[in-house]
Length: 172
Image (cartoon, rainbow, N blue to C red):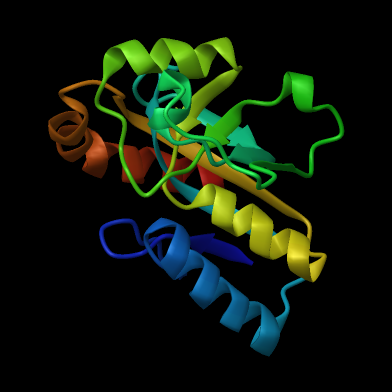
């Protein structure tokens, strides 16, 4: 089953499950209880911490949930904040998920130092729900912006073309 965030990121081949970590957790849990898919494939956009370029398409089976305050030593978590279904995590492009978009370019370097290349608001929740239900999962992401002060403007400017390119990629 193909799934996507929804709202401005809807595809004719995917079921929308919500925007952000909370909506996805609630809606995808409900969907898994009522329909338990054999496989989940999430499609969406992502911001790049710098190495992936605009309109790059990346597939991944690994996500984490790290907040920017972690890199300033202003926070910690007792939770396991990484989940993966990949056989070899070291070769994975790790996708970070938060309900906030990174706009501080200096923090992007911190993410890259941990081998985290992209940020998407939903993917960590998708993997955690899939893990809870024992459902295999993967995702494909297209880069719309860099994680810097222009992140939102660039996302808006590139969004339509990104959606078209990602749709072609998935259907191909």
